[in-house]
Length: 286
Image 1 (cartoon, rainbow, N blue to C red):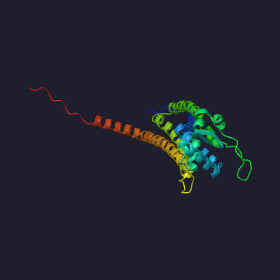
Image 2: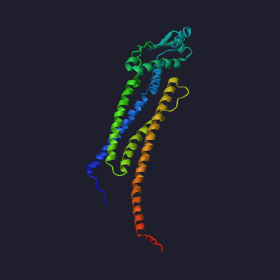
Image 3: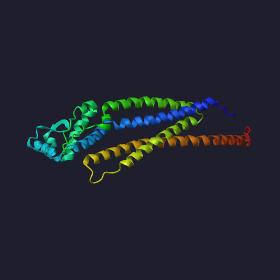
Image 4: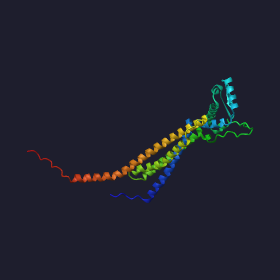
């Protein structure tokens, strides 16, 4: 029996749905990545390292020494360090070096940034004093870390769920417009084509960060480790999805190739069985 020829519009619609599904899956992968980056356990340490870099470049050794002296003289007192308007007990700062002090105070600002947003964090940034040459300095700019907040994380999660619903609908349409094992293979191919660039992106990002040098500041070492670990986790996730999709597609292709062969073999066996003479049943005993 010959299979019915599909109408041209159905084939065209399948291609259109597949293309839109590829785009939707890629966008969903980006939203998933952004959601992971803005998760608190990653966002706050990243913000801390970045702000510590800004603080360390604005504070002189004399100012660090003055804070240490205050902390040592009265560990129970609250101490602060311009250009940040945050206070911590002197007992937490006493004995720390300059980089560790910057990280501690930057962490306080990063916690406010994540929980309350960029406006609340920027309110804790003071106008800087002139530098050692007497030249005015610009206030600290949070830059890209201003997006590392709980509010942004919630937004990315909401958009992620919407994107997932669209992906499921488009992949279902691709499967519906396919035939036979193509209902399994076509969505798998679309998924593989969409996740391969994301796996490559985070692989390249992790390699680009590299390892910290011996003379790098502590906050730079921490930032490198955080970014490399984050890139590695996202790479592993997308590689896993890609591997499942490829295995899924291979199974569908093998099934498509083997199904006609198994049917042909079945017909031959049935024909052979029909031609084989059957033994006569024994008659009734006398």
